[in-house]
Length: 280
Ligand SMILES: Nc1ncnc2c1ncn2[C@@H]1O[C@H](COP(=O)(O)OP(=O)(O)OP(=O)(O)O)[C@@H](O)[C@H]1O
Ligand SMILES: [Mg+2]
Image (cartoon, rainbow, N blue to C red; front, side, top):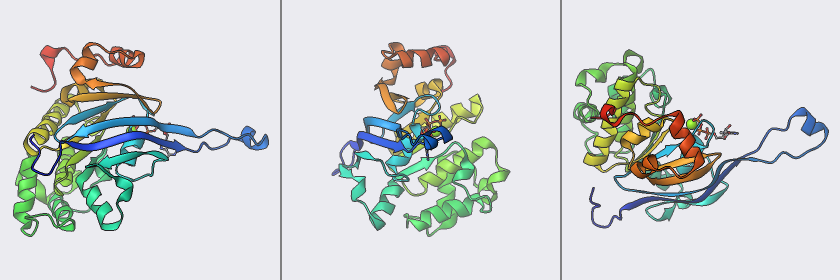
């Protein structure tokens, strides 16, 4: 994607980010008045993301992937370090500016119910998301909804359904459409395809690639499944115990992993036979 005038290629810069959680003291610690060291869920994490780029964040359960994502959109405040969007520290944003920042960085979760109201039809939910942020075209509900559904390869009929009346794959497409309703520059997909079966995963991975290529959306693609990251990510960062232990172009890291943990992950989740790639 070529950046429009006035925009630089670099969208996001994360510098030495740290997030600690206090540990609950057990009975023994309380009786002996022992202090328990806080747990560093995100430990000195730095990376960048360009417009139109897909960065895969890999790592086992508890490695800090979701905590990192939550810091980026200020759902939680990091203890130290800096997150800059277009060169501006996100802590500088308050009120309307923070709302605008959150519009630009949308999250898609593993469980679509987390972002979809079960009582609303798909059409109403997509329309509402656009209206709240005054998106161009959102005055015409039918056309606005239809364009979004088309973008995620769903038919207009889906607009009248409620989330529970959809398949898992359709529901996740609707979550993506809801994110797109506000014209984000970046999507943080946190285990967005992990609960789906392999054929549906492949379709959704293709959709993310289309969004990158056609809309220039940047994606932070979080997954514990290396095979999935191998399909979509331009670059990969591998997390362990809150730290990035290895990072580089996806092909290079997969061909020649340097870190022992990456090597172990690759043994545990072998890269699929390239002749049987998930994505055509
Ligand atoms: N609100 C919280 N309070 C205390 N500890 C937390 C909190 N949220 C996360 N943690 C801890 O931080 C660490 C990282 O958790 P996180 O959810 O970021 O991992 P993850 O990589 O997303 O794991 P998964 O692959 O299972 O989703 C874990 O040890 C977790 O128990
Ligand atoms: Mg997580």
